[in-house]
Image (cartoon, rainbow, N blue to C red; front, side):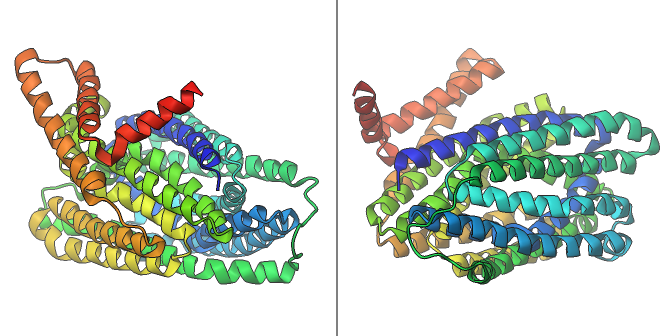
Length: 506
């Protein structure tokens, strides 16, 4: 496994993720100002259904394609990678078309009996049109990640977001006169057009990339075996994703219902929109770097495993967990300090900032989970991921069901914290067991946490004497955190810095 190639792939995907997240910021500002918190809640209510269909039709297949394509490409069996992709597309198309027809025809029943809000009926019907395009583009994206050609998925991702936002901005003012539900329909229409464009880009890219790849260095894999392998590898992955997505959908449905029991004076859909459509996306924005890195990490580790590169796996795991920890504790302390001001500037809602400040404690565990999933997928630990995801979801649902009528929104924070601690800690332990390589807990986790706390208190003291303006304050805080990290040598940062300087000189 080439560390340089892994870094290049992660950088390309990170750039794409950061660009789309920035566009998403402005998109959410537009949406929150146009349809309000209640409209955001209605829109967010159907998104778990979208993720559930993706989980059934393409989640397992996409990961299987990435893993198998990485293995065959590492062996030089390029013809086999084409057959793997073709098999995956066949499976995903059949399943997604079936689901699209079912959801379209039963949209009203799903809205009333499953989502418990009949206003979502028309939104579900529109959303169902994008399922085949979404499934097929996901498969092709998995192929490109497997062969470590990250530019095509990155371009597709940015183009999809541009179209999604553009269509919504054009249609929303037109549809808004018909009410909030019609304005939400404009946003869902944007999702459909975005998925169609993404599919077209990925399809043409795959056709161009595969032209001329007709050789195998090793054994030729029959098409029937490719199809069987895809199904065998993807099925447990699909079960894992479907279970977690289904339980996540149940969780999303429960939140507004249980909030209503907490207080009848609360607009539960508006509270749900503030939580899942405004505060959580801000918390998840910095993770775009880790999501990109995790996407590159999984096929890279798979390729290293199949070629017996044990040292490459250990190095990738060590550096990825260190990067994750440094970022996670910075984001945690950053939102703890600036959460209220950020939400006041972006949404004009300081109360959302109070919520963001409380949610910031989730960052270390949320971000660690993203990286650990990429590592464990690459190591083939799909059953473990499935069990961990299901247990975490049940923890979430149990706490929300029993505590939210008593604690309100605070119960969501408690449920997320408990479930994320469970999944991240067990994931790290499993990773250590598989690689037979321990983690320096003091250097990787405790010291960055201490540095974050020290940075928070140092900034507060500094702000008492100098009243640092908001923008300068954020930069100042980042510098303070980095200084503490460097002084403490958290995650062996000084050694890595010295190696980087040495490599630049040569």
